[in-house]
Image (cartoon, rainbow, N blue to C red; front, side, top):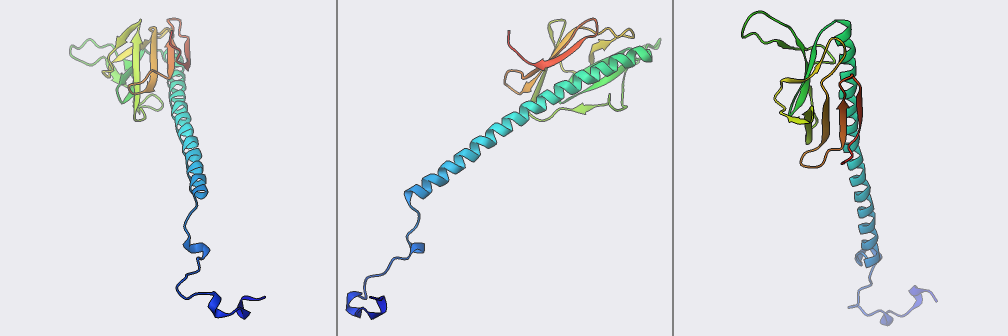
Length: 184
């Protein structure tokens, strides 16, 4: 029997019919949305962590490649080069011996790729020269001689106030190695 043929007394006037659009969300629908949001948040957090570690790795490789290039440059020119760090970046310098007093013997190299380069934010760099922590004062502490020899050093790269993620190690014979940091 069709609804239109039923008597009107079967449908009282004070009772409202509930439409699907008026009833709201069920508990299962809300739980499914929360599950989807938590999965997406987890993936985003993992991706952000991976991108940050990749940024540190890229910086460590960049610095080690620049040091290797500077070693070759020092031998070809010949010139004594130095690498200086500040808390916000690094730059190469060239040594110019002078007989004049009070003249700066280290001149900043402004040519690419040796010019001033800035670190990403929230990055911490720690430099050790011959196993002693070195201040990041903008003075060249890593020295490359005209024969390609280098002062032994270790550079740690990582997030501020956390253990380092990557390490660059330079040996006196000019060998430079970059890789993940492992605590001893």
